[in-house]
Image 1 (spheres, each protein chain N blue to C red):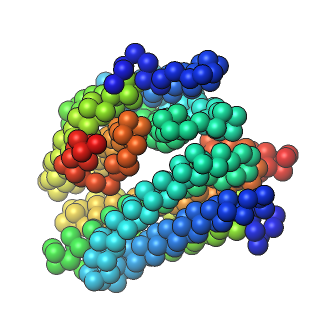
Image 2 (image 1 turned 90 degrees about the horizontal axis):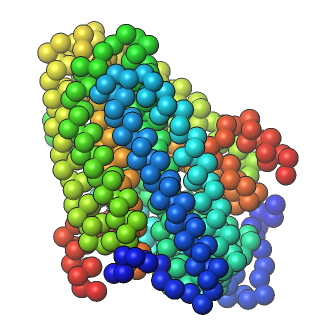
Length: 239
Length: 239
């Protein structure tokens, strides 16, 4: 795969530059969403109301980027009538930005949780439990966006595999929280908040995995959703 | 809006019948997803392991329908190069089936929760709390699918408005569950399960609302996501 120019050349240079323009918009949206997620995690871990507010208020930019890119995709489909790889690229982008927008929603929730918490005078010590999960999710999202930017199917495959680690970490954290709540019912409210945040992080991991599946679809033209990792690897190798 | 033939006529009859074919597949997928959701709610309320198993095992059919319809959309985009309303219909379908598939995932979760519960010898009395929320969500989904089938923008708009009711019911239920847990810590495990199910139901409501937004997009060619209900109504009236 030519990583310098993953889209390939067209007879029409203008078409090339239009595709490149859409792709750059998606990368910018991905960058913003990644910042939102990392800031959301930081706000929780550091009990930082300023960062939390930025995240909660920044989501509308992500939303308007989705609407704009969607419109660009419809325009290019209508005017250029792309085929084969170009068509797959547009479809992959239409799907990717839906997941990016929903990752943004989850990041916004992290910010809002932190703001509520500060309002109630709570501290961040409970949120230390989220640090490991937060790191895993942040890394997974970064790798997914990287795989998308470089149209790298092998990186996408590796990233999909790592989502299992997040699911396991999430389950372990949940069991731990239930134990804490049962031991001391006064902790229930806070423990539930940690649980909602953990769930938001886990969902971000799922959306990042979806993006990796679109990369595989883009490269291989096969729909690799809904099959497990081993089958996925075999299908891709078989091509 | 001509409700008999929302797609409109084309010079090519074969193109018409292809579009109609895709649309019928989406309606069939919608019907199956609706059954899955209703069965998932029934399994919880009636503590019915047989229904729970059917729901948990039926999700792969929903998944394969999504993959199949996706492929049909890509084919028709490549071969027919649709424009204007037809193009919007295909885009709306590509987005709709993603949400349908995720509604299916949430229904599957309801089935799995119930199976775990039966394994542990719990009864369904705790789940009675979910009945009202379940009814609201089931009705919202039905109305959303109906609005999609009839390409009815007014019905879509009405349905979107009703999602607020679901969100309020969900918040009320959550507050109630926290109170119960604090009063009797032995109920924590079960109350958390009810909370996860409520969350799954609330998410189904969100996805149904997304489908209504695609109906508005299809009819009006405007992107009405991310704006509030009042603005949405004004934008549509303004057209």
